[in-house]
Image 1 (cartoon, rainbow, N blue to C red):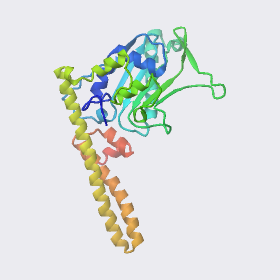
Image 2 (image 1 turned 45 degrees about the vertical axis):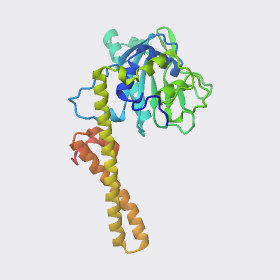
Image 3 (image 1 turned 90 degrees about the vertical axis):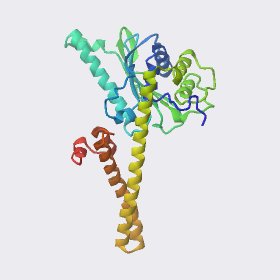
Image 4 (image 1 turned 60 degrees about the vertical axis):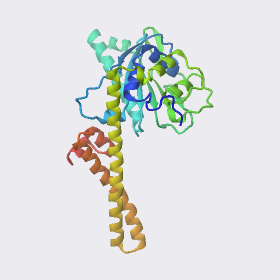
Length: 319
């Protein structure tokens, strides 16, 4: 596969933070994804690319790439989330981010205006854009945009803010794996090519060209290059740990399956024993692997328990 920038990805945590710390790039991206008349943006969160090397490895760096919060000139806020690895409840989490941000904004308004019903008139909408490296929708569309509408008439549900009617909620998804070179979407296609690290099929606009220049590793400061190398090394360690867990689970599963099969003494029992034993062994091996990674400081209990489908307290009771 031909990559514009071999060895570096626009969806890498530090790289993406460098990209979205540029207000012009972020503003153009929001305009193109949400079709909003944004003129300027302020980056409220996500512009700090510094990682403290003294902190132990956190799977948060590995599973969730970036969370950027930008505010448009009319007060509307937009969360930009890049999700590299598939998560079954990613959309739920993105929705929770929106709700949490709205609540935080309301609390700030109440501190300024007082806890009265007048506080609600100052609430600005919060939207979300997700750039994902796996598919969450069953069709072949690489771009989806959702808003809240009346079921029969299709009328958009809006709120008034700063004298303007705005969508109550908007969520957009850019699914990189669904990119097609034959796409006729002249607005979103260049962004798919940019974040997918694909060759450009048309001359990119100024904002995308600026973003692409930020992928030039040689132009980075020594500090940025050092942080990027450290983060990439930690990601590779996490991948190796994950592969090791799968190998151990497969070995344990096969061993348990054969033991059960021999005890059954019949061909059907042997086949079922192998199948069930492999499944049980995989789960047990996976548990042991996650326990080891937490003990070694490679993962947090929160992330490990989430991956295993149990509560944090249940997981920590096994440590």
